[in-house]
Image (cartoon, rainbow, N blue to C red; front, side, top):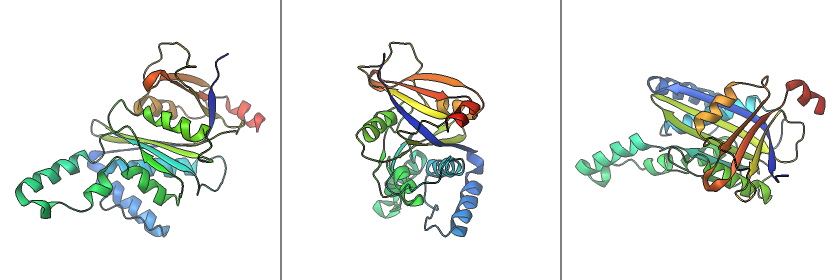
Length: 246
């Protein structure tokens, strides 16, 4: 028998918007944050941070239980975050020098910006970390997730992945915990030394987005390979079975 670590997915969300719609989406979300009296300004946030926050808000709306997440962790895997902003900043630096660079570039366009923004948005005091950073590196988020959850570093964890797919900015968000047998969705992780030797496709943001699009009503086992030889499997039980277990 293959030993594996299984984590319950207690909330899942996805979001997307076209490049042309980004300003309107940002403005609408900012208005909602103001109405909710959340001290979060999105003016200088990268578009991937905006779509990541939208995905998290959708996952919160769909969460199966209300719980204190203040000590949870956040792992975010954006793909080339802030690339266009940094490119423009470098061009200005060439012509205007250091005074032409906005001080907001570093805090809002780095690998860790998304994780930090989500921690503030969710009032989370646990660790937050940006991983990956390039297309094809999203799977690295699961290697860190395994360490944090299996070592008991956090009681729960947000895993958020974002990236551009052509002219569309996409984001997915998963809330995960250990020891919840009644969850309809779960993630099974096998370390490299215990992974099943199968030709599973590589994990990607798009692959997870397609699975989440199926919803709760489709029983599913979808395996993926991860960096270093580990494997990951998304599992969805029948809705009736999940309710019976609860």
